[in-house]
Length: 178
Picture 1: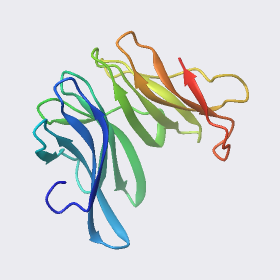
Picture 2: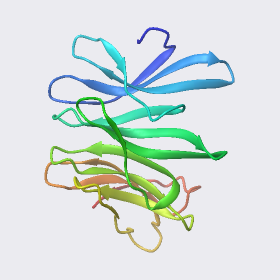
Picture 3: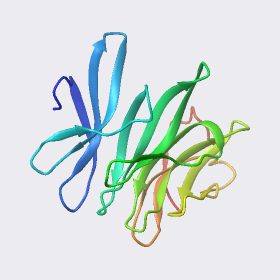
């Protein structure tokens, strides 16, 4: 655990043994604070940079040391969560979205392609792929009834896995590939 953390969760590991995830600080019982964390192979923990006040979490890492996740914060009294990428030197970047107030990056491959979820301005959204140049595209829906999609990982060949549901309330989650 990082000093001061009450709990932590690991999400991914690279070939060098660096682990990424999230740590929980319990500064206020009704308002926990989460921050993206990286643990070196020898167990030393470090908090990843943020874009200001807010909470962050890390979901994926590639062998070049690039980390992906999300940063949750308030803008003009509106809560939003942005997909982010941390470079190996610790610099954090916001990724493009489809226009909604929630996006999250979940996985990254060696080519720098990132997958996750982005909401759209019209209230929709779904699984997305960010190319290494920063461009974003929504992955195709998986049939008429499977309209809600979420991408979790991408391999070296660009194959994407995730899940799909008929609705947000649908308990019938299905494994999906793109």
